Image (cartoon, helix red, strand yellow):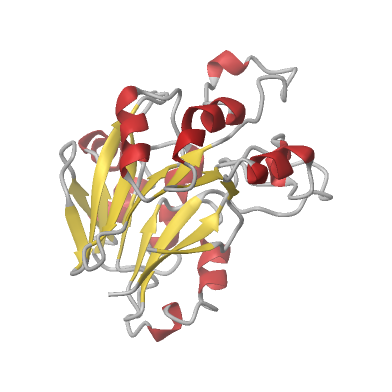
Length: 278
C-alpha cells in the first residue's frame, strides 16, 4: 500500500499570524497531520481550529479525491487537550458536518476530559465520535496496512497527558514519528526519533529570547538549536522535520538566516501541505 503524510498545518496552536498580529507574515495553519493512501483512505492526527480550511486544501490531493466515504476522515487521533490539537472536533458535531461514530483514538485521560466537558461531551453522547481509549504503547490500525502507536511524552498536563504517534506502513516497514508538543527531550522520546525513518518534531521556538514580555518557563518547549544539536548525527540516515512553529520563530520565514542554517545542517522545516512518502 502506498501511504503519504500530508502536513495540514505547521504552526503552534495560535497559527501564523496569530490573532491581532501583522498580516505580513505568510499564513500557516495550526499543526496537524493527515495520513492518506492511494486507495482513498484518510486519517487525521489532531483536529485543529483550522480544520475546515485544512480539509478543503486536502481535497486537491489526488489520493484524497478518490474517497468514496461521505465522512472527510476514516478516524482521528488526538495528542492532548491544548487548544490547537483537539478543538477542531466541534466540526464533527450536529451544527456542522455531523459525523456518525467517527473513530477517535485518545489516551484514557483524554477520553475522560472529552466525556466530562461540553461541547465535547455532546459529540460522544450523540454518537458523532466514538472514543477508543489507548493503553500506553497500544497499537491500532485505522485500516489494514497502517498501524499507529501512542508514545507518552512530558508536556504540561493541566487537563490531560500528551502523546506523540508512531506511524508504520506495514507493507514497506517505513515508519514516522509525529511529535508536535513536548516540554523537553526525554530519553524515551530521543530513542523514538532515532528509531524512525522520519520524525516531525516540536520546534515551537528558535531561542528563549523570542518573547521578551512572557515568562517562557510557563510554557517550556525544546529550543530549535538544541534539537538540531541533539539529532544532527542522524541527518543523512533519518529525515527530521521541524514543525509546530510559533509566530515569533524565524523558521517561519524560509528566507531567514535561521531557516537557511537549518537546511544547511540537513533539517527540513515543515510547510503547510508538505507531502512525505511513507
